[in-house]
View (cartoon, rainbow over the protein chains, first blue to last red):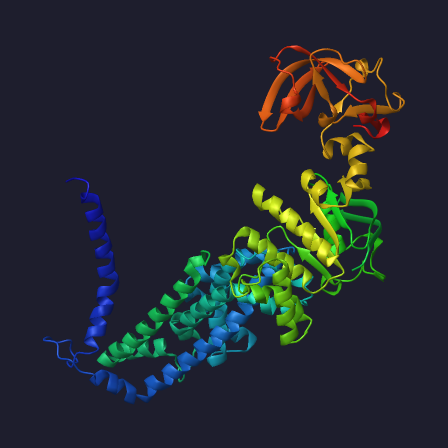
Amino acid sequence: MRRPLLPLLGRAWLALILVFLYAPILVMAAMSFNASPFYQLPFEFSTRWYADMAMNPQIIEASLRSVGIALATMVIATALGTAASIALFRYDFPGKRVLQVLLFPPIAIPWLITGTAMLIFFFAIGIGRGTPAVLIGHVALALPYVIVTVSARLSSFDVTLEEAARALGADAWTVLRRVTLPWIAPGIVAGALFAFAVSFDQFVVSYFLAEPGDSTLPVLIYTAIRKGFTPEINAISTIIITVSMGIMFLATRKSSFGGSR
Amino acid sequence: MSSVEVRNITKSFGRARALDDVSITFEDGGFFALLGPSGSGKTTLLRTIAGFSFPDTGTIRIGARNVEAVPVEKRDIGMMFQSYALFPNMSVADNVGFGLRVRRVGAAEERRRVAEALDLVQLGDKGGRMPHQLSGGQRQRVALARAIVTQPKVLLLDEPLSALDKTLRVDMQIELKRIQREVGITTIFVTHDQEEALTLSDRIGILRDGRIVQAGTPREVYDHPNSAFAATFLGEANWLPDAALEGLQLPGDRTRHRFAVRPEALTLTDGRPATGNALSARLEQRVFAGAMATCLVRVDGEPWKLVARDRDLPEMAPGSEVWVSWTPEDTLAVPREAAT
């Protein structure tokens, strides 16, 4: 009975990883339904913190702002990213390689550094802090994610399809709309979901770029924790996590992480 | 339907000259094969006629219209690709109807013509399928229906059958020929498969290094190749060694011609035949292939190939001395200056 040992160990290892990943989140979600404000047991089910949260105008306002910015980021980054991916796919131009490489660091550079740099830069060129600055920052951060997912999909695109459509008399716009875009649609959807999630979950860059009066939800949560922890935060965090994980789940299903179909 | 006239087309990619002063006429309603090895420029020529590539110099006429500067979508051509290039997100009927929708013919007219085209390729009942639900041969037919449903002036085929397996390919050749006759459309197709070119086309153009080496009916080109390249690229040729020419009846001057004989023109005997041209040889191998057999012999050290009905061949062991003979009219005389 030595053979099952390794798979067993492997499973235990995996279980441990999942526990460390998700236990804190599950505890937090559970506590958001616990009546006690001090995490006291026994557990007593209550939706009190959700009700409190819903009554808190700051949280509501920040939530709406976050969703608004995330939607705007999604639309802008998806449009720009899709156009960029198609250009990178279709044309060879001097500096293409460099440009492709330059598009990736925003994924790798610590957001803290990006955020600081953006703040300095936006002040230097007169945009300053505020919602427009946050939006520009988010779009810049989300763009590479869109380009990566759309490009992955495009890499399996057969260019002869475009040639076939043109031979049948279709102009460039019709070819794009009827042949190219339908093929890369799953990549675009995945990229859009990534863009939404990157913006909606964004704390660091928003923290630097938002005006004190109009924080986004993650920034508000951070400020609230500093002032003193209330289970309302558990409630709103649970909602955010549910939404984000839902989106990520959809995104990975759609993109298959760059695999075909 | 229209004729296609290519005049003095030159096309370079960087320093490489893909087409070098090519002139050729494709007659109205003809089935024309462009044959050549890879890199000979046959695909470039087809893509230039289609409008995917524009010539550096020269003119192209489709019907009465000069099109060398017209982009592909305005040339009114039908094209079939090696990979079929069916739109994966559209049903068979939508694929076939694509060109009609682009031309805004109206829904009823589109339905009618799509049904007609699908009937023509014997896929009348498959309109609702998606491309990935079809077999390779069926996809091929859909691609053909899509290419001809708009009634283009010319049908261009880029190695259309090379992705199919052998039996299916032969079926499709017959099918393609039938449909081309029925529709009467001027057809130009590119292939590197000489058998396909011979079976399908009524005219052949052989390309090499961006030039048309020879053009004519398959029989003309096969029976009277104008160069060693044409002789070996279309069919096989056994070259007569210079030392063996003495005493043979030859259709040309030996200082200006090289001579060759097709494998199927040769007869193998164990004794010297009374008439015709004959050379002694050594039998190296006999390969049985059902009705036909191939014999590999050596004539003056040169490897020759002979194809005959198996039952016509005498029983002889490899290594025996034999005679190969042929009627003098079957000798090919190929101009020497073109020989390589």
